[in-house]
Length: 484
Image 1 (cartoon, rainbow, N blue to C red):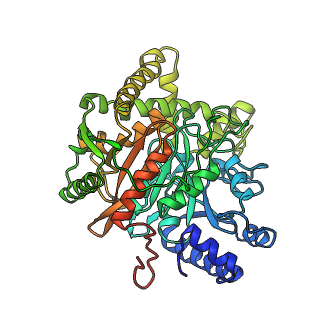
Image 2 (cartoon, rainbow, N blue to C red):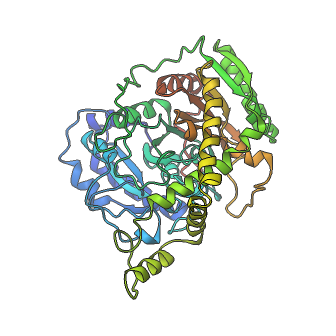
Image 3 (cartoon, rainbow, N blue to C red):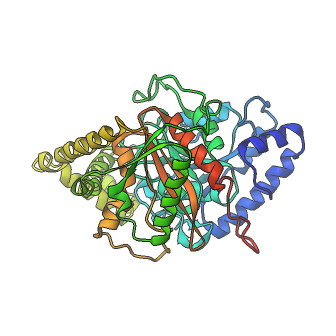
């Protein structure tokens, strides 16, 4: 099966050069193969897809284009599990807003993708259905929590997928798998109908294999939704029409405090080559720093805020309102038994931490203090963005870890470098992970962060780099011999 971009596939299907039923037959065969190889999907929606092929018209670039959804987006009459035992039999009666947006533009849902349980993780190893594997090396993780969505795109099965990003859950796995991952400004896309993790940090975003496809998808998803009171009223630009690789004069900050923690010489060398391309594009490139001790506060601050908000958001998963109900003697016992059996140990630990931080005797010194530290961090980032259009960093300091690999979670390399993507969730700013090369036959990426609601500048810088780097539309099917 040949893999196409959104625009290529739309034209081929519309013109009849590709028979639409033959294409979808081959697509679902490929999905079956990739499921055996990568374990990326929770539910295949084959019946839904075929049912909708005949009733669609050809207006718009997404008509008849297949896509995959992370399994925390509500889909009417289609199981939505968030990869948790607690929701293993949950079938929503409504669609998330973004699902309706895609349906209205004619896109065809082909699968719900695996994720870390309830979105709480960065490896996609905590999913109820087991770990998702990296298309480039099945002995390595895809990353999380949007690993299933990323693997589907990186294996060439579909041209785009939706994910959510609370700490780095789109961008980190996209970097590990060599595809484009993007979260726009907080509030740019409605989160109505998305099973939450932490409301002040959650973003809806997408995964594609090139920047033009990302501009198409984000343009369709963006805009005000009255069902989500946090969604923005700001006018949405036409990202695709406004794509421009002439980035002369754009001011770009190189975040030295993060870059200094890169220990892998090949990744460091690659990053320097990216900066040289930007110089040749006549951007204004300057190094900036954030206090190292402040960056060390990002992970603990995130941990407290995210788990406190998660505890609050998931209090409804009690076996009474929502969730698999266990037998018990009375309502309280039913709740205890349901939550005991419905959540994995990692989720329980997060809820316990949230409970401790929200306890009346601890709230001021834990939760409120974390909020204050977050504000200090946000002010530091905004100070940089008041002077520069873009902040650039390596997306990670390593290639995708092996499935059983243990990390040194006390090193500065881990605490600062591997968690700095959380800055984009603290600030709510638009951030993109862009493929920029290979190390040891595995993809690596950079991150571009822009100012609030200035998604277009992020797109344009990424577009200009993509033209030179040549890594757009890459994928790895991994059959008899990897197709790259």
